[in-house]
Image (cartoon, rainbow, N blue to C red):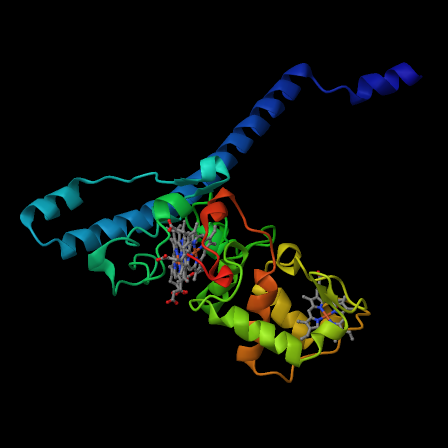
Length: 271
Ligand code: HEC
Ligand code: HEC
Ligand code: HEC
Ligand code: HEC
């Protein structure tokens, strides 16, 4: 009895092979299409950049060189491989004088204190996902990436870990520190040993929560973000004050790499 049952459910071997082959083909086809989409995005930006280079060429030689240049896979290897940043595959004009007023991602980088890109890369100041080559993935604006791109004023948070003390180019850290003292945060939180114990120690707050949006939302609605939280809401503060508090919170982390070792320490008063 049991035997006949088994016979009924047996599938011919040929079918199994055919099915397996078909599945492998489908998987390969899927991977290929994903890869092509992934690849296409940065190539599109490189093509546009080449067209802009041709337009902006001052001499016939420059024009010819621009026309002749092909797609380039480029990356900056930081601190011996601690980071690999491919942002320049799309942000092609960061060091190009003729791209001062270009649209993103082609614009020349705004003037900042000198940190050579070939040594520092980009993510050490901007976060994001250095190895990725599609816009959303590279900017880390996807669910699985915990360090989304820092834009505008939030970029200042990244200066804190390498530069202890006040920095005139990162005034939002100082402003945030002041707001922290003025709004009674100290009553519940400790930073480097000083403060209360109702809330978590914030000495490395910026290492646990690296998304500016999380902090803003948490300041406005602590109980929505952390159910049952004893933290009061700070939604009454001005948006720019919440931004400064967030920059200060994000700046509370350890220096990211060997790059930090040579950093001057303005607070020590010597150069
Ligand atoms: C596949 C192409 C691509 C890659 C790779 C890429 N970007 Fe972008 N980036 C863009 C585009 C397109 C924009 C403009 C749209 C936007 O703001 O999201 C942009 C905008 C930006 C902006 C904001 C500019 C502004 O005016 O607000 C910053 C900052 C930035 N990118 C940094 C980075 C960093 C850092 C990396 C590497 C981790 C990176 N990008 C990788 C395409 C790219
Ligand atoms: C030392 C830190 C640092 C490094 C390294 C750095 N940036 Fe920036 N970046 C900044 C700061 C600060 C600003 C904002 C300047 C301003 O607003 O005047 C900025 C602005 C930008 C902007 C304009 C968007 C905005 O919000 O103003 C883009 C795009 C950008 N950076 C891309 C890059 C790319 C690509 C790299 C790597 C090749 C890079 N950056 C490396 C600090 C850095
Ligand atoms: C990964 C660590 C790191 C980060 C992040 C970083 N710096 Fe620096 N910074 C350094 C180092 C190292 C030097 C020394 C560079 C040199 O002189 O070769 C330096 C130099 C400087 C100087 C002095 C330049 C001079 O002319 O003497 C200033 C000002 C400065 N940084 C401001 C900033 C600001 C503002 C930010 C954030 C946008 C920032 N740094 C982010 C490591 C860092
Ligand atoms: C009455 C006490 C109290 C006060 C005042 C208070 N907090 Fe909190 N805070 C908490 C508690 C409790 C938590 C843990 C639950 C949560 O995440 O909301 C917390 C969490 C946090 C976190 C998340 C820490 C982490 O690692 O998850 C940050 C950041 C923070 N607070 C910043 C602040 C700042 C900045 C202020 C002042 C503007 C402040 N807090 C005022 C009690 C307080």
